[in-house]
Each structure stands twice: as structure tokens, then as C-alpha cells.
Image (cartoon, rainbow, N blue to C red; front, top):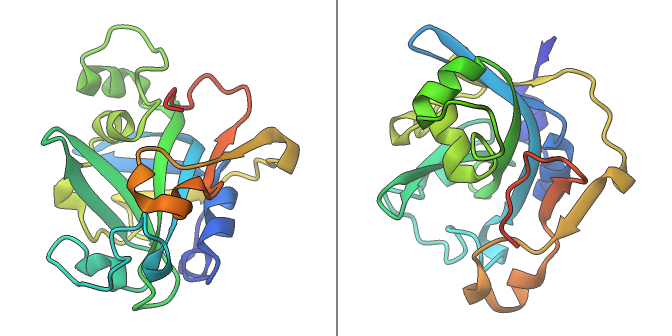
Length: 200
């Protein structure tokens, strides 16, 4: 199977990339354990032109600095003091675009993921949400800036074809403060997949 190359991430259209990431596979090799699965839900954030994006003001902070890096690195941050969210930086340097990975369908290392999530049986609570999948995959804020073409966190193309009619495009979650930008249909979910998050 082929690891996604840097060129996949550095393209200019973050919405297209978010749509194309559905059906790709996300993996981690942490503490010698392989875990991962197929991406089934994403959200696109379009840099300074998108009020829902952390970089919309153009102000660079310790948290957002990695967003101005060339695409192909991880942007991880903590919410509610509990959950780490995993984002993929896209586009060329200084554009500050990103894709949030919201859910995966687990395929590798499920026993390890269950241990990390303190669960006994696989169910949608394992990886169906952006803060749940990072726990399952062992991704934390220490992975901020990780190169996604290396061997710690990476994505693969396993030739899964996702047709347009298999996707639901809808507004993103939890960004009502962004006004009109909150209504943009930049959340992509695989229709009928039980592993997508339940948030409306």
C-alpha cells in the first residue's frame, strides 16, 4: 500500500483534500504498536478566509504557528482540557489551511485501541469522534508538528473508491460563532457508516 506523498497535502484546495481523505487510511506506530483505520469523516478549514479556522485573524500564536508550515504536518491541540484533536496542515507555507480528522473505521490494532479507550468491545464510541480517535490511536499534543510522511503518524491510499453519492456534505460542528462561514458544507461523512460521529 502506498503512503500519501507530500504533494497530496500541499495542493491549494483544502475542501477537495478533505473530501478526498475520506476513504484514505490513518495509522500510528506508537510504542511499537500499529493502530489505525479508514477515515470516514473530515472537516475542512480554509485559513485566513474562514472565520471558523484558528488562523482566520492571521495572528500567529504558539498554538497556531504550525498552521503556517508547508502542508503534510500534524496540528494537534487540546480542547476541554481533555481531548486532543488531530488536524492535517495543507497547502503551501503561510496559507494556514487544515483538515480535521473527525472519525475513522478501525481496522488495525483494535485490541490496543480498546485498552487506550478503556473499552471492552468495539463500538462506535471507540473512534467515532475527533477526541476519541486520537485517544485510540495514541495521538497527543506532543505530536504537534509531526511529519506525516514519516513512520510515526502517516496516511495511506489503499485504493478505496468513494463516490460523490456515498458522501454527506454538511456544515461543520461547533463553529456557530463563525457566522455565515459556519454554514459552509465542509464536513464530509461516509453515508451509512456507523463509525462517523453523531454530532449534528
